[in-house]
Length: 138
Length: 139
Image (tube, rainbow over all chains, first blue to last red; front, side):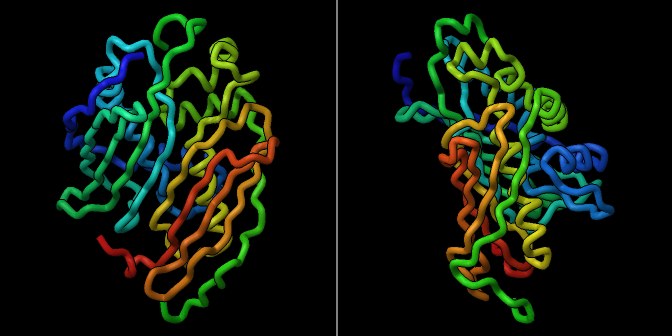
């Protein structure tokens, strides 16, 4: 893989997202929370929104033409106030390519519809050359 | 954080054991999270990359710290959670989550070092958390 220069930011959004109760409950169950009546949105739940087609497509665009796969290197969530089940938020995402080491930084900001910031999240994806035996893109 | 007894620096949380996760568990997480990366579900793809079995989603493991922290101190709010995915935990492996208080003060809250271990006992995730009361959160 040839070294890529640092890229300008690509911005996505704001995307309207909702802490849908059914999806939150399913996510809580999958990360090991006991089934209770508590209506708490897990701190990692916004990772669900980072898999939306718009963001996925942007990541694929960054990797277009490269025989490489993104590998999740690190993740952080920094809250200013908790999220609430049933509430909608505006999600804004910026993507930036870093050259050395080759990786993609995905920064997300979540705000209430009134404009109050609730969360900053950072995802680092290491760009790894695709092994020859893997064939085409997944 | 007046009124709440803060944990002492050095306090260790009880180890929290999760898994092992089978293929159905990984598929269920993929569905719930929307993470469609087939590396976690496809044995052939995992082998092509050099893993004897598909790796468990790193986010599934990082997110699992919250139930542990919540069980330890329900009166504190988990304001920050972060982790570096150091090495994969493979399907079928049991996982141990641990935590230790590194700093604790009424002003800054409770800062913890988090570790996730697979069966190799080498860290799979090196993470950190900040727990505080909502009124202590600063934008």
